[in-house]
Amino acid sequence: MAEVSVRISGRDYLIVCDDGQEARVAALARRIDEEATALAAGGGQITEARLLLMSALMLADKLDEAEQALESAPPPEMAFSAMDETEARAAIDAAAARLEALSAGGASEDA
Image (cartoon, rainbow, N blue to C red; front, side, top):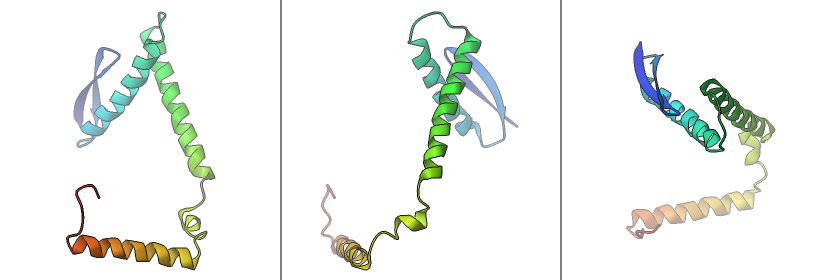
């Protein structure tokens, strides 16, 4: 098991995680710290426990919204079914032309 030190709302925590997961745990802790910092900036006195709870609730709310958006999105295979054959051929032709231009050295710096 690995250990990673993270800082949330000005306080250091030592977290145990699986080997190789240190960077992910640190990145997740930074997201929690961002939420905690935003909540603390709202003013007023808030205990550390309440700050962490509110941060977790805010992140859970964002996760829930993302999951609901995924559930209501059309399946990937249906996203392309709306394109008719003419549009598909035009898109393929445009991509092929772009690839030919790139392979011929016609790519510009801002492409």
